[in-house]
Amino acid sequence: MHDDVYKYSYGRKRIHCSCCRSLRICGSRSCAPAIRTPRVHNGGSCRAQSGWGDPGAGHAPPWRCSPRTSFSDIDVERLASHDAVVLALPHGVSGQIAQELAKTNPDLVIVDAGADFRLSSASDWCHWYGGDHAGTWAYGLPELPRAEGGSQRDVLSGATRIAGPGCNASAVALGLAPLIGLVDTSQLAVTLIVGTSGAGKSSRPDLTFSRMSGGAHPYSVGNAHRHIPEILQSLRMAGAEEPHLSVSAVLVPMTRGILAVCTGP
Image (tube, rainbow, N blue to C red; front, side, top):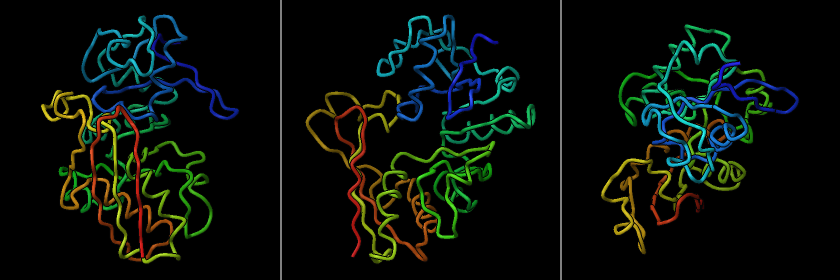
């Protein structure tokens, strides 16, 4: 077993898993088990886009990484030798690496925590993210109801390519889906209150303590939040015919967390 292979128990199935990640977006709690797991494996390592050789504990204290855990460069050949790979990289980067991994090992299970494979519409991807559309994978939100019957959990069962859902998109979609048929989905309004981990790890002036402390800061003003097409896609999957969404997002000085206030007439 390679020194960067970790054992996971998923239901009754035990797999070897490697985590390829960029700390820039690993604030998501969905990645926490993958980051914490090296604590129980001496000499374990994580593949990273940056910070090569740095100890994990200094970069990600919320996950209590072991001091023995360090980051090394992304090696597609080595990653492809595993049973499963979790990608948590900036959009555009995940898609390219995922395609290389799939070519190297077609049987590899790949979970992309980024946005590259979430949207089914290439035009939506071009409008909201820019660049080429990498494709569409099974949407990794098992609790999402499906109007066409069955469940999203069934869709994901046995899938080898899974697109992890967006954080805000998950909160809103799961909040609104049960209301389909009860409210007018053409006049939905959402207020998102989110913590700073959603903004990533970059050293931006607007994310410094002096700027963030004691205030609330709107962002993606003018219905410009990138998760809007993903939310609408999920609502259509759940049975909404022509959903329309107005989103107001506010960044507040807390490490992580999302409060989604969803309303409809």
